[in-house]
Length: 122
Image 1 (cartoon, one colour):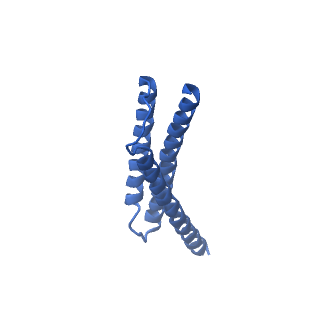
Image 2 (spheres, rainbow, N blue to C red):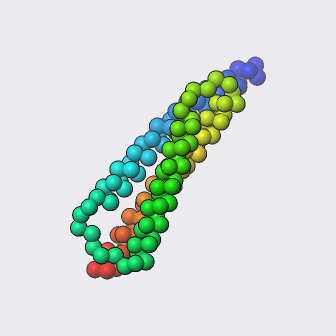
Image 3 (cartoon, rainbow, N blue to C red):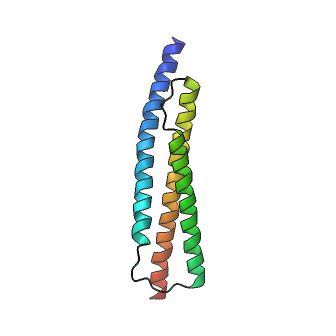
């Protein structure tokens, strides 16, 4: 009976990890597309030095979080059969999802910083 509960729990964890992996890939893709769109060459207004440093810092944090999330996602790519390995995989996917949202949060913080700056300077 205990084995059946463990198998059921492991199946549930695998399903949860599949969903989390999809969410993580989507968030990483959207963050990449957003940064690419925002950093495309165009009409950029001159920024004060402090604003430039804050923007560069937020970009660096977002990039580091993106790479950390991609690392955990890559580490969880192989299917595992042992229960302990399944648990490790689930935790890696969970950590990847957390880091992906940190990358998205840094992008949002940068975007808000730019918006507030435009409001204040005009």
